[in-house]
Amino acid sequence: MTWNWEQPDWPNFEWDAARLAKAEQQFMVSGGVILGSVAHLEDEVAETLMVQTITTEALTTSEIEGELLDRDSVQSSIRREFGLKTDLMRAKPSEEGIAELMVDLYKHSDQPLSHKMLYQWHKHVTKGRADLREIGSYRTHPEPMQVVSGKIYDPNVHFQAPPSEQVPDEMDAFIAWFNETGPEGPSPLPAVTRAGIAHLYFVCIHPFEDGNGRIARALSEKALAQGLGRATLTALAATILTHRTEYYDQLELANKKNEVSDWLAWFAGITLEAQQRTQAWVEFILAKTKLLDRLQGKLNERQEKALLRMMREGPEGFKGGMSAGNYQSITGAPTATATRDLADLVEHGALDRTGERKGTRYHLTIPIKPAPRVVIEEDGTIVNAKAE
Image (cartoon, rainbow, N blue to C red; front, side, top):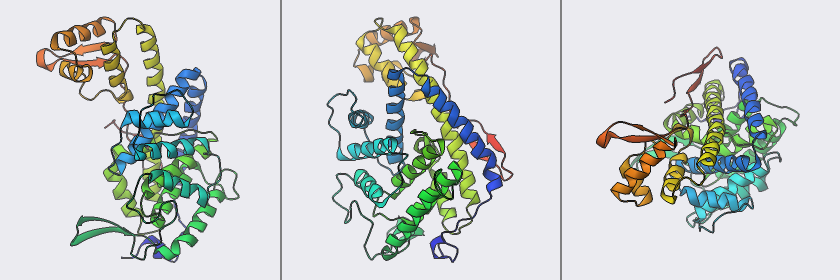
């Protein structure tokens, strides 16, 4: 097996720019719409949106790697990093670390990339780890760096990265490429193209002992924000998580050659879908704020707790709807009280009721807006498929 980095044209990636032209244009248009929507939000609502978006990206970029974190702890850490009012909830090192990475990414998205920045990001994503030889520096171990699955005695090697002794030179070249292809660089690339290549290029070098996937996704976010000229996060990790199996399959297909049109077309579709998911969050936060304002002083503590729990799921809705049993689990209310509370929420226009008896479910009156799947065809046509 010959990997892309072993081939004579590495890392001179080639792609069909015409295939991506409409997607690049759509990205800039949608990015402008999102930034315009956020610019007109009241400060408190804009703050809520920022924290919610960064929290979701922190959670989902970790979940892609199989790490499930506590939302409240991560959100508390993010608010603390921004100097915002928060409770004093203690977070695990992994939760603090990913919060630190995402806030650093948001605050400094306009800054040039450097080894120092990547080392600091690695310290964030590996915070609390005691099983790694190198933290905050590139790998130096002599063993091959492989991405494998299957049984120990019969592994399936999905990829093998360059040997450790090549990593410093590879990373010098990667950082130079990233900065030169930015909007202010001598060889600027369109935002989505640059973000997709940055992701693939970085994971193919696989410079760190662990945490490469999370850092690669952060680099893509950095490239997209620089392309828009504004500190922002797109719901990229949340969208990749929805298509996680495809994501790994596409990376594996792309690591064997340096013609990357198919990878970039897939990545462009994910990015446009992520923008639609982001816009849905903006609209959801606005509707949520209006609903809570209208209900202020009309709900008891149990009802507020249940509503906030449902709203945590965002514009795609509380999976399966809220049942009386769910309500009891969330609030600790006895059966009769739960029934009364839910009926009162329906009366107030906070929830809609569907079904009967054991099949009764309650849904927020805020419209559900799942993001449609976006596919870039070979001729560059953008297809919005039905939401999954």
